[in-house]
Image: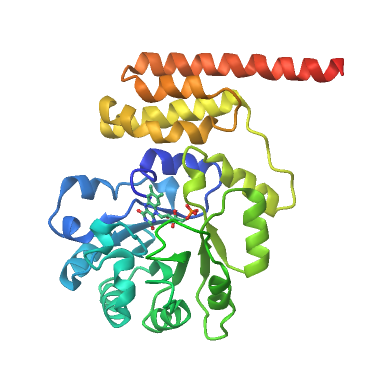
Length: 319
Ligand SMILES: Cc1cc2nc3c(=O)[nH]c(=O)nc-3n(C[C@H](O)[C@H](O)[C@H](O)COP(=O)(O)O)c2cc1C
């Protein structure tokens, strides 16, 4: 996920149980032209394997060149993004913009498959718009030209992120007797319970969790615990603060202090929003540019909630 699954955060997710990691999406044109910001997005650590480098684009030569560049970075697989709905991507026929031209989608995907000896996977949506959701046919055709797995977000391009993800068609793809490659489902999984329920209902080979992982790497651990029949752990506040600080430090190393402080802002709610009275802490965290103040606020937050927990337990005892 763009500006989310950068290397420091992926490593944290891996530690908490994410089985497969994928880089942020990277523009094939930029990789082909050796744009350093994009090239850096391919950096990863051995501990992150199995890892996929995700590329997007709409020009065959650029996609092929980007595939060669990505292969040289030695990932475990290459993932093509045919799912992004935002205008600057889909508007140019990349991402989910390709979904109104399936022959071209198949042609470009085949070019990527042929350009590498690494497995190629695809991430896509149900179709371009409500009246056309050809995902069952798309999955068959992409399997036929050699992709090794497909991940499906249960929305159309027109839906962007609105409405509810429809998993019934994802289930149809999975249960299509013609399909033999792994089929992964995606869309609206925001709790271990929902992951378990959807995995059982639709029989998918795996689940991608997107927005619910923002500032919440713990969801991987909790989901795996539930899938194994255990009760999901409750993550203590000290651990959340520690991981949050580690995340920020990793981002500082990657992007420099100023950019990291900015980028980290979208993560705090994920880490702490479930806690009552988080609002004033959040306000401080997302408005200051001072690293010392951020760390101090995180320390204060920890002390506050440790006391809260104590009071809570104390009240329970009195009851
Ligand atoms: C901020 C943001 C950035 C994203 N970047 C990517 C991306 O780079 N590649 C990708 O395949 N999907 C990307 N997505 C889409 C998610 O991977 C996922 O398909 C979508 O959010 C639906 O899943 P969810 O309901 O679990 O969030 C992004 C989503 C968000 C909100």
